[in-house]
Length: 55
Image 1 (tube, rainbow, N blue to C red):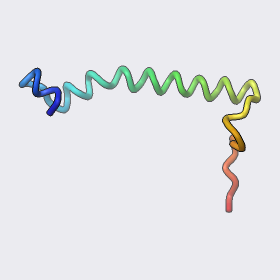
Image 2: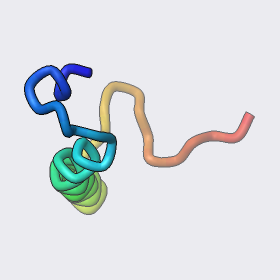
Image 3: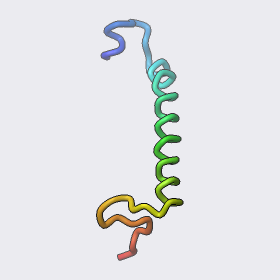
């Protein structure tokens, strides 16, 4: 609705086409950060580990 306010012919395909490059870029960046932290042995956070303990 917000996008159609400015461009009447905007549909769901247009929104996906506009947002897909941002989504892929963020996925690649955050995955590379995770791999960097993992290889350097840095903790993810306070009390966080890379292994999820089974209850």
